[in-house]
Length: 97
Image (cartoon, rainbow, N blue to C red):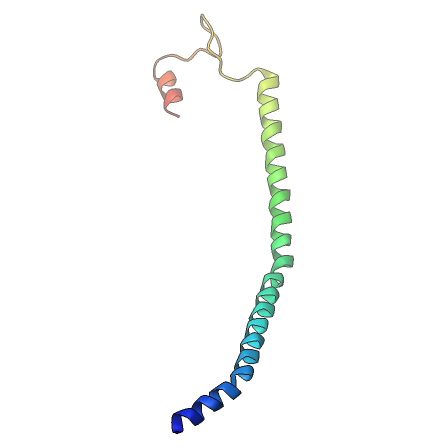
């Protein structure tokens, strides 16, 4: 008799439990959406700074490469003795590094 009474109560409260479960899921979804948007402004600030720094570094490297290639002061292997010819220990150091 007692079990039948509890079963009836449980069935009567079924709708309330279902509604509570839906409300909890809704709150969780809203909390997730809120968390995603919180740091977006800060992240964009750092991404913009990174892109700016990256562009500056690329420009400096490109300028350095153009300067070296334009002046012709780079090391080149030539026949005979000249600026670009490395001998002995200097040649080995160059190969290591």
